[in-house]
Image 1 (cartoon, one colour):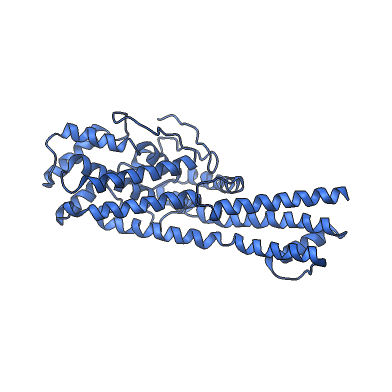
Image 2: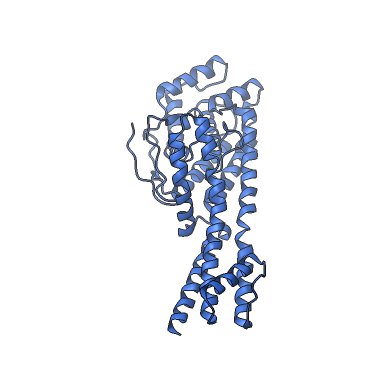
Length: 363
């Protein structure tokens, strides 16, 4: 009798733990971590990291990593269902004198709603009904994720028209200059401000979304985010056209979103960097962009040195987190984003899903 009580308590604990994991992952509108979710995605990531390291080109790595998030997405509800089945097996076994096999059959029948094993008595009927309901609830995770993915990718796809593929900040400015739209970008900055706000909400609530790759290998939400942040920073620092407010709120919305996604994955960064702190972009790279803009006739401020300091002061807010997220997601090539890393640098290891990534040396 004591053994059955202990098994009943253990079964309830497993079921409760699983349900709380599903609630924090699917429903709770904040970046709360779940040990089950972290364990599943960390385990699933291991073979993909190995396969990606063995690949010789980006196209090969992209084909490998394109499957990581979908496999993890399917594995997570599978883990929840397996834990529910185990927990309810313990509950059913503790209520009658049948074998563990009979209890497992009853649990599986209830979880899948197939009804091939009939419960006996009120208590078993209550357990069967609750298990069936929880099983259906676990599967709501899938459509919620894909809806958020679709909204994200629409904006990423539209960026190709404005910034090219791969996207770049200098191309964004040049294209808008050619069509006479440099002074009419306020609505664009505000649209991306809203995109960044939704990005933060969805990619910390559904963390697997960070690893869902775009339908085209050359596109990525990470490089799109970096391009828009660099475009707004470049315009705010060097191109005296348009209102400063929309550019500023776009940049702030963007770096806050990237920082909070980085916080979820434990990526270390300075929450209050100084404007003069170093960034990954060099002055020579900035001067090359300045020369291209000047040659194209883009209106520029009088002092390029001050423009560089202003640009660096904006970029320092998102430089570290942008590059780290680009590396852990194996983002495709894009200037000033994923080109800051490569096979000659060690990519940060995703130590644990939602955990801290150890600092790595450069070089």
